[in-house]
Image: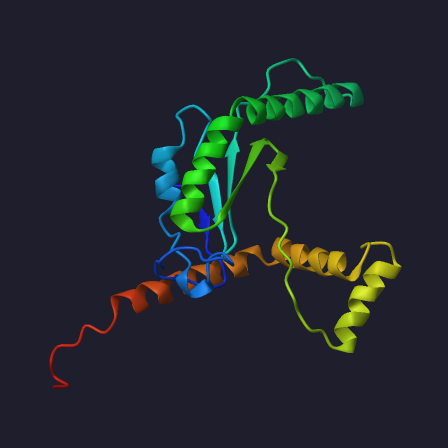
Length: 206
């Protein structure tokens, strides 16, 4: 198992002493670089058909696994596609219900280890369902031209509110800049490695 792990924008952080009354402080947030490997050993065999995708930021770990495809002769008519979608939804619901207690226990252990909430998801082909993912408020200040963009999205009915419009814009950037964001994360991971390694020096500066 060698699932992808997307690093959060904070970069690596050392292990702290643990969460305080207000939760983990960013400076003390445990490093989750080994989260994919830890889950490799912890997840039961047979849950997923392949390696789950593990996405990590400073608040949450999201685990998404591929389930076996549904069996059945679904033709390419509207009725056939509707029946297949219903069968897929049922398969995902079955996984969610049958694994609930064990997923709760794995999440509890991961939250203790990494100081982050854990959410789950399941995928069958193009169908994806996420279970109880966190919705985290992010405060920002915008100048008038930026606010006008959000208000245009709201006035046109694309978004319900400014916060919804901002989330929509972030999703759009993520969809169309995935390659660039991936390169940026790789570069950040390299910086973390160099920072952890530190200067080796050959004694010539002494």
